Amino acid sequence: MRPSSAAGQTTHLVLTALAVLATAACGPDLTIDPDAAVPYTIDFGAQQATAHIANVGNEDAGEFLVYLEISDPATPAAARPESQASVTVTGLAAGADDTLTVALADFSPRFGSGFDPTTIATGLLEVHIDAKGFVDEKNEDNNSFSGVF
Image (cartoon, rainbow, N blue to C red; front, side, top):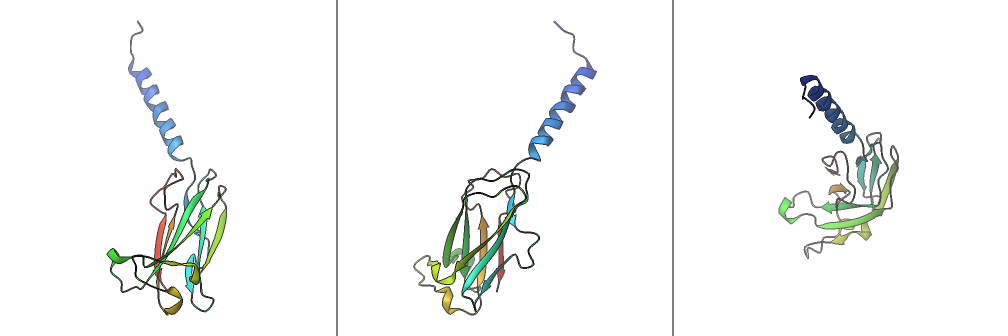
């Protein structure tokens, strides 16, 4: 039997901590593109919604879904979204970005609201990247964004 030593235990503890830190720092990280001048918007003139997404992580991301949701800003949170579009992204390399554009006419009404985003002048746009959690990311807390346009 090998005697235990404080130095041996300290070395093991340091190596374990380094392994945990190295693992935590690796992986894809899907988010709104931090370099985009306008990261997401509704363009009522062009009748489209756009989201600029990015993988700011250090590993490629596989396939994932992005939900774009439009509601009347006055609608209570419990009744949102009033309309939704889904975009399948087949993958996004580490450090890469992509622009997703969806025609307002392609949004589907939700909750039987009959909501039509092509007829409004102001809307709440919510963007949910990796909406179904298909990608194991190093930061899962930066996938949803919203703004009134």
